[in-house]
Image (cartoon, rainbow, N blue to C red):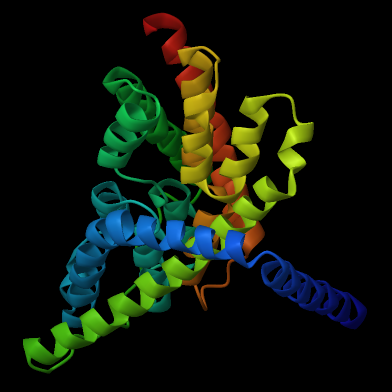
Length: 302
């Protein structure tokens, strides 16, 4: 166990040093990718996530959230705001003792979703050029969440939530709101860090010319999407494949979410006794299911 731990540490440290050296050697690429990430964060993430983070934190600190079912609330908030809101609220429920570990995994399996506005408007209309394809993406996305819910819920769904350890704070609403805002900005800053990190990694791979050895633009889109989903979806715009294939690939990329979304979700699940690999496994299974649904629907209506 000790050797494994030391070996893992060496890999992490070595990787961090290598990344620093690459960023020093290619400062222009790093700066451009960082600007793109910050622009995405300011124009898309902050307007859609920050208000919901503040509301969710306020409801938690006042104890109002204790009256809402943990089985419904994370999914509902994720539906309104997108990644990684479902993970954030589910993690809060677990840390407050309202759900156990198995219930947490089950709720995560279907609540780590994005919103219909992003699926239909941003990806469907902007990236794929079709409102109809955006609707297909949304149907496939939420259908895959339902399948994950059923699969991971076997033996768990019937269990009742536990008694909450989160006691409502006897403070003024002004102080509670201020704390909620501070906590929300902390969470939103962590998300920015992950977006910057994976945007830089994607752009460095592009700059290195490694994608020149891949003859398929579809595979390039999948690789990019496996790191940062918006970059992968953007790459689908230049693919000359059919609408069915583009929609299928987009469904996989968005529903899987990429390593960036997995990292963001993990940052919301600190001290929750769940590993990065488990999150990736949940999202990968959901991504494959979403792609199957998208392909099946497109085969009939496109």
